[in-house]
Length: 270
Image (tube, rainbow, N blue to C red; front, side, top):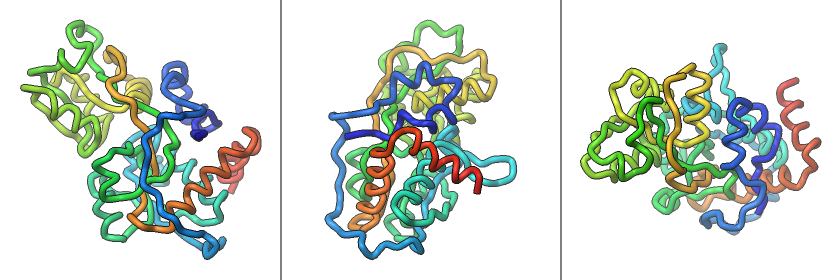
């Protein structure tokens, strides 16, 4: 399986952390988690098809809101490229992260791309595309902290995480920990910078990006990655859009790299 990660999107959205994130990103993967897929055809899809795709624009560099109110980020560009490759138009809708799966279950949106980790629990209620990005949870602490290098060393500590994420779930498993959740990863990291918590558990690439772009020079990522996680595009159960979105991913992955980046150049010029 080829993952759409070694691309212009990485260089566009993760320039300052590429040296570290590159170790987390795969061009090919044989151990990605299996996800439920539907056996449907997509011959009814035309260029007039529009999919409403949810995202929470509070997770840079994957999705965020620009000063003019438009959405930008790795996931935004990727979803637009998938739509162009598979012949559908993407209409983005901003939702809180913990409201995305309920919206998928209610059928008010067609899909969601929001740096969402594929987990068995989530796969019970929604379907996922093939994974497109490999990441993992990491611990962030202040530069002066030397006694935190693992989950075990976080017992009894004050931990911040983004609400509804796998980082928050992992923090809640730590004995004696006081867990505080925030609407975004940058807010959680700011709490750490202010000294109000001892650590932040969050996706490694997002944490590294937020530290650099936020000028949080007193923070660092410590220890090894806590998990191996794969991001996928979430779709309602039994939806034909699983096959449609996978078709777009496959088309992108089979293109030469120069042609692949052309999708993004066309989008930015339009």
